[in-house]
Length: 161
Image (cartoon, rainbow, N blue to C red; front, side, top):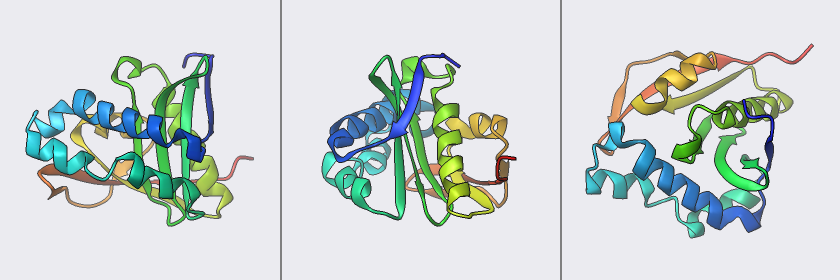
């Protein structure tokens, strides 16, 4: 992991950059999943606008974080108090450089602080190996939603000693 990656809680002022990172990561980094189909991309990104992101940032049931590299935002992630990791998106040029791992580990720390014994998520094909490296395992049959394959995964969480 790049030593200069910092993870911090996102603030309402970050709504625009969060929306842009998510949309770009989907459009550029997830082509394996959407196969550059404009309808699939539009369905996947339609609820990732600034107007959708802003309420997430003030909802106490959600935790959004942001990865900064020398104060430049390069990734974002979100989890819910229910234990669901909603997403982890990194700018494509920063894939495989530690930002995603740091974002998810921070989400897991928050989930542990909420008293949750496990985290769960629906992975795409693009991110399945990433989540597997972080200890997530498939826990149900793959399903299709909005033209995308979703792989249900979970991971037991343990409190740091």
